[in-house]
Length: 438
Image 1 (cartoon, rainbow, N blue to C red):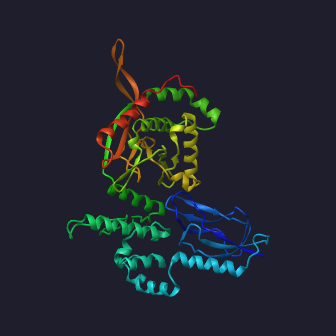
Image 2: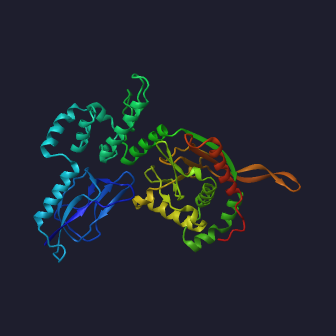
Image 3: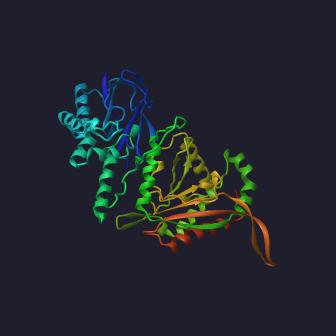
């Protein structure tokens, strides 16, 4: 028999580590090649990791809750010997063990000392989270107090503080130190944590623990409001042509393509066209530099059965026609709801669209997805009486109208650009050709 290392796979652009959520197999189990072995969480998505070889799960190297770097060994599989695999078992085990210790960068005796110096009993009241030796080492080196460590919101399993969480805390703490003009100024929280306030709880109240995704959303929303100077412009668009055309072709489209034709592809198409007209909306901010994006990758907010939101990305949206956009959006939305998206499909967005109209809302003030600088909320389409200009004079007619709410980062997007952009989106929607071929 031969031993093969199973490594933490690369799970998307810019992802350098993952948290082991659950092992689906236990030591001694036989595993088929490509059979799911464990669940891993990244800062973008939870996903199952398949076995790279068929064989017996001989040893689990990374426990549930551990944060593991991409490429580090997580398990050893015992497989049938072949010409390329027959290596010494002891060599594989020593290599795996060494890589694991190198990942933590902490010797066993140092680990014990760190856990002792940051004993759970000494942390803030009510904080019963497990802290890895790596996190404790960083905390000790950066002189993070026990009470401050307990306040850091963790994005790991059961709210566990990951290496990334503590690095974000340190970065934001440094920024706050530079920006604080008065030593007594109230600090802005660097990561999301529910404020500890006195409150009364009755026997009829239900206490619900935030899940990992909700904690992540909360932290990112707070961070975005802190980072970007949010401004919102509103435009009302007449989408009567789109409504009439869709009503005419939706049955034929469903029969032909086997899926529904929603309004979202029309919105994405109009946004992609407007971005081409105003490319300075398609940017990111890096310190005092502006990154002008070449690709137009539009994120589409999707509501999950849990009530959380996820934002898969339609890459190169400007290169797809209406049918191509419809099929792509339906595909990623359906797979998002059953947690089958890959991490790459949740990264790389340059602009975001959120359809608040699907919840019956007429408008909203969306929060920007960092590091983007703008986001569009589209409201519910409603029938309204409106003044329509005709060659023989103005008339009152029933029209299908909706509000577009455009939030943008006023640090780099002025009101003129933000306002002209959303007006251009409305113009493209209103100019939809009723003679468009399906």
